[in-house]
Length: 209
Image (cartoon, rainbow, N blue to C red; front, top):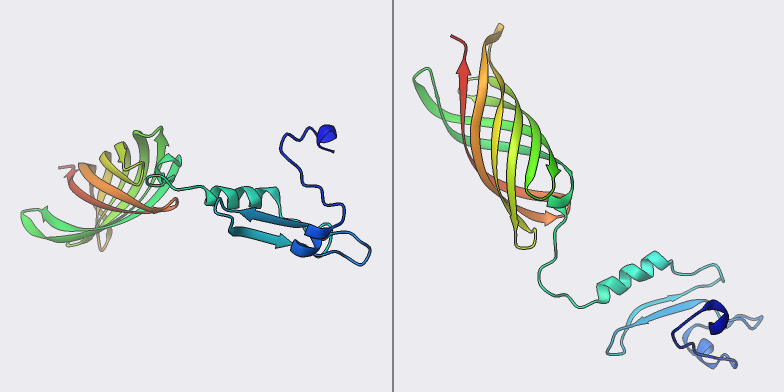
């Protein structure tokens, strides 16, 4: 059988079904139930699957995944968040605000989508709103430079937004102009699809007139 199938690893012959009866069980018609055992190097059982029918077998993909989990861990695992081309982010910010010689605390929200070109450069499109003390909405294009560290678990980034902005009044759009700034931040990955980032930014709105 090994020669016919080109199998290069040892096969165990069990013509009397002695091992089959011990580890899997034998049906009334004399056939062993399909079974799989995965053993760790120390001989303990890492996985066991005993089927009730011939078709009841563990899939190859599941077995390979279990074998991968059995491998010894070396170093920190690589996160995949920064290698995914498209990222969607939601930010809520709190900081100082100065407008028309009035100073105060401002709150802003921003949603952005980024597309990464490799590990170090990304382009994004963001939409944001200044909630307090004045209402203002922005639409920006964003250039982003990013440097991963700790095998991709964390990342330092610098981004430059540039776009249009509009100040809102009760009657609608009051004034419009340009929005630009600079942001420096750090991100940390909790899972391949979730991350938390802390950012310091300086933004400016330049209105017409």
